[in-house]
Image (cartoon, rainbow, N blue to C red; front, side, top):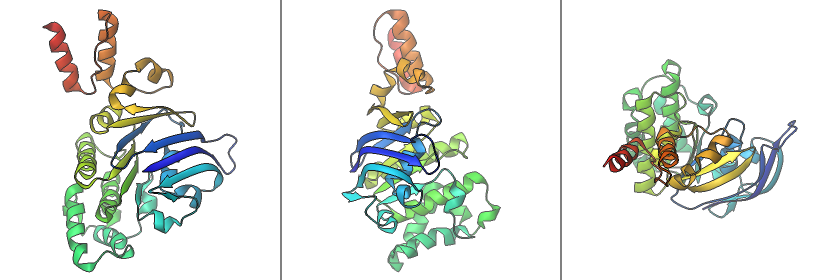
Length: 279
């Protein structure tokens, strides 16, 4: 479990807190999406889960973050990284090798993965992320989206208990974005990995995540199932969240019909809702 209690953080030199008294529980095996307007604290929260804050990024840190019972402030980042794999928004800062194969091998060797498992793990990760054909390419020859996939593959190969991803599809086209989210769902369901994703493509996120945490001005202002959170369209729009069109459709129908219409999480549900109403 990820247990966050009264977490407040202010970056060195900043005038305001980036996180303000955040309390959040993320159960083992959850698939949580974190949404909110720019500057809400989403990235700061993601970096706190893996211990990047406060170990690598300094500031005023209050409260506690515990991952699988380990307090992130009291344990070494190397120990935490065996539990939590983090994909930064700036993937360039995570790449340490010049060739794709070496990038994935670097993590496997440093984590002491047995040699008889390394090849299988590398093949699995490259194949699942869809970059098997890039195995022997140099990193410098790759596009931004391809580099993003390499970083994700390097973490998938390590099979951490928790994956935290900050805008993992930012450089990807719609097809590749869906492929990454399908992979995350597979890792979540088949391997029991806890997945935490900060994502702006809310419609795509809502299709795959089970729960949403909504952030505004450094606080978690809403936490619940996707359907529960999307049921408050007015509240989400008030803080600057762009809601999925399917949920907006449900809200509009409720308003026009004068009765509550179940929230449509995706386009298929919206179509089914329209069919039932039309008769």
